[in-house]
Image (cartoon, rainbow, N blue to C red; front, side, top):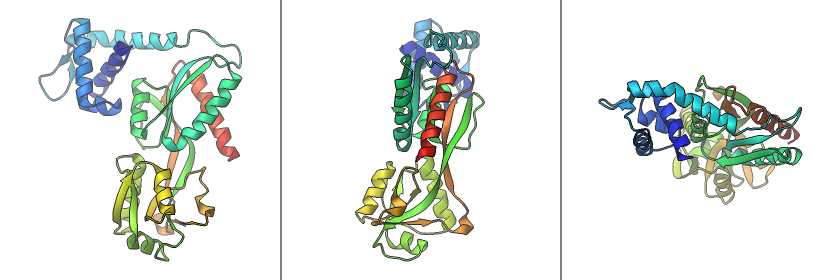
Length: 295
């Protein structure tokens, strides 16, 4: 199975033109990509890249093999779904990812589908949006619930599911009456700025022109809110769909000012175009959408 992973990485390198860029897309380190390509060359008994410069350019042997490798990977995908399901039946194996805040919704949707379809095998994975999107692009995942990046790749499609507005969240007894007073007069609990949501929050802070006093940075939204409940500080986060923060007596939730505009993060499904298990990923998305409407 490692060879299949190496072949997917090879296709990613051929598409993006460098080990470093491919590493970012498939959620590996550059060293891991380099190791995989060396191992693949040893297994196939030939060099596949021109490494004379900073870019990883396919040589003649690599260009000759690329179409066959793509055909092999397509065949492997079909083998994973060997049986054609009957009308209305879902059968086969898929791998689906989700960011942490969406995993509950995805798990519930998948569990109900599995009860209805005995031949359905779904493996779930959690991760950051960028990592999950890269794995969908490389074929390691069939689909993932992620935060929209605004970036479009021809081999994938994006289907929006719902939006979450960004809000300021503070303890009920926090110092300050206005949004600016809360943000500037209390320790600021920042969400991980290496993630898409964290970068969006950073842009909003600049537009607000506030000078926050950073106290800590975490990559778990619910943990940040729990620290706010404990009066550790204030934060700026998306108002999660399943959360009851706005009605909690120990929290103050303030919308962003009108001159900033409706700042939201968009959650949706990314999957590869016309893959062999699209009927399954479409059904998972539909069930997620139905559950979301029921909330």
